[in-house]
Image (cartoon, rainbow, N blue to C red; front, top):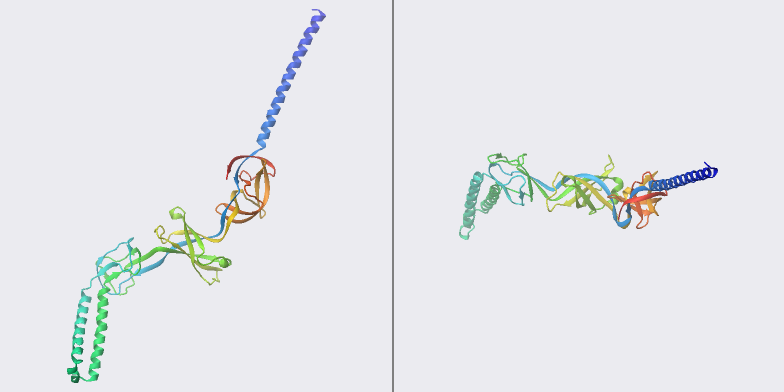
Length: 359
């Protein structure tokens, strides 16, 4: 092979090698650029955010109470006798004065008839002697005794009439029959310890709670209260403070507060467990942040704002806290975007990517 051809072949292989190197360099540059982009995306921390807003927020004191009937009555008999009829059952609603049961009244009716007969006889005798033509037939002393006898018989007749009336057992209050103890055929004794019925009024119910003495200046009569009943799906009911004890219990440093709730639809029942929230204060149109956005460190509160794609840490002054919200007195402005999830391990000025934002 001639020297010319040899040099020509060498030049070809040299150019081929340079081309391969150039192509490889381009591929490496492209790969490096892609890796850098991936690294830049990985640096952005995915977070959830919510917008700070304004609304009313209150301060509440939480306690627990058992609901009780505001009015309750044990029904007893004022006379003795056999039970002839029972007209109501447990769960029935009764009005005040409604007939609940009937006792045998035969003996009391006969006693009344006897008193009425004696009274009629004395009355007739008084009428006869008081007439003008017969006044000389009896002394003034005897006439006075006869008048006293008449009054005594009148009182006895009234008692006998009352006994007959009281063989009918009537409801002393309006409410529901919570217990029926009596049965037909039972012998009921006068003023016996065993009750015939128990009636509870449910139109208004009460709950008793005990607050620390330091809360005494913060509670007042008719102050709003919220009740939640786990037994009926934690539904909330409006109530109010009806009574406040003026005495502090020296043994535990608490005072008694009675909460009253109107139960016109009879959803609430005596004995139900209630979660009580007493409203101690209310701030209207306050700037609030989700409680999930607040981080507490060394007795200081912080939030992370999203500003220009970065998480900016800001110290705040918190006020009322309630229902998953925190009142922000300083450190946050209206419409600030606050990180609520994914911010626990963030650093200040870290790049973030908002995956969900709520207003």
